[in-house]
Length: 458
Image (cartoon, rainbow, N blue to C red):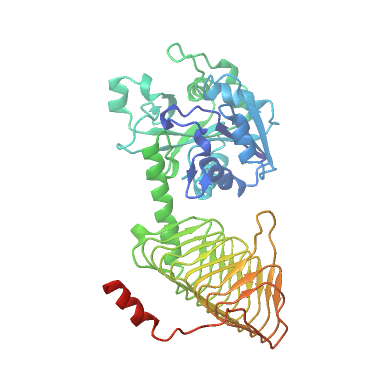
């Protein structure tokens, strides 16, 4: 079976009350539409067509990296039937899977089951349905006395009797053969809404005597998003799914209810995640790490046995095995931390590589620097890397000792094994094995404090 996919993503999303197209609202780091694209990608369709309309340019730009997608524009938002008619022009005589771009909970497993049932029963139309009395706004699946599907009636057009009798709800996920697509022109515009409903196609196919059926799936898999509350609810479902998966693979969460983990994050065995932590983007965490409370890690890679102490922010950085970061540390993008490194409290690292077993324990800024192994960075040290127009590099070679409250004015190089005395401003290279010192001479004025006290009293 040659399968093509059509994703309906043209709607306004009025109830979101937003300037952002509904399908671009994010669920744990990804737009809703991306979840749908990822779910169907595993099916390896011949073609994936996305129907866009509201905010078309924004949707196209956001999905620019998905170069396998084809986009068609629904110029007038005349309903799902019209949207599929617009997409039909891009399709060959393939079997077509149709689904919505605002249903991020859909799983590849559920879609595969639908495809298998469709092929097995040789249907012209198959679709997913569900039963859930807590959910509203979904069309009712109509069946005759022999349990055969005869049509779908939209919720807002269903009578009280129909709502009472028919509890099976339409998910909006269909598989259609070419014969069914040929009936699209038979759909009539709804008098009340002025739209063409794709749901009407089911009744048309039934009347033509074609084979069709609905297959019940878990309601959670096909929940859509129409407002901010539902966006939160679905985000929480995905968050819980992600954490449950990680726990099944050997990760400990002290309090799963207060941890936020994107589904794109991977975590190794025996790692412990404390409450109020945020693991985001393409973060990869090794085995036996500890992530303490209040930390946020984004697009970063941590080795094994890494400790991230309280209230630390790590962005697009790499950390080697057995290193310790924090508390209250900030690793800005493009920071590379070696093995057994200690980055302590109130230390900020930016676009800097730090060698193995180096320590910067407190109150330090290292930017645009290359730091060798076994280096000690004293408290209050900063690299002065910016002159107001340009950034410059600092090189600190292996075994250097930098005393507290030192300023390293880039571009500058401190040679292997050199010492920088506390309070020194370094503005020229320090040769290997040397001591750099730039203090004014200390004077002790004997008796000065006593004389001052006497003047104050008088």
